[in-house]
Image 1 (tube, helix red, strand yellow):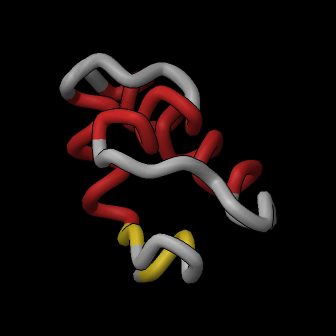
Image 2 (tube, one colour):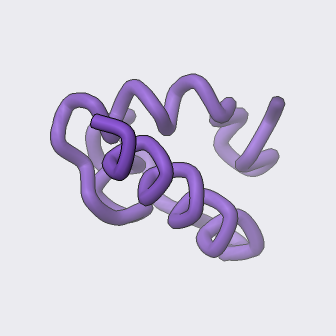
Length: 56
């Protein structure tokens, strides 16, 4: 599923970033070489990262 339309970031990309140590949407986006643009994805990205780190 696409989470961030502006940067074409998928849920699996965010989960992979969380596994590599990203604890916030901004740090995950930095790992991918971009940053949130419109901001609508940030809350959902935060939920995905938190769920991934909770199961790790």
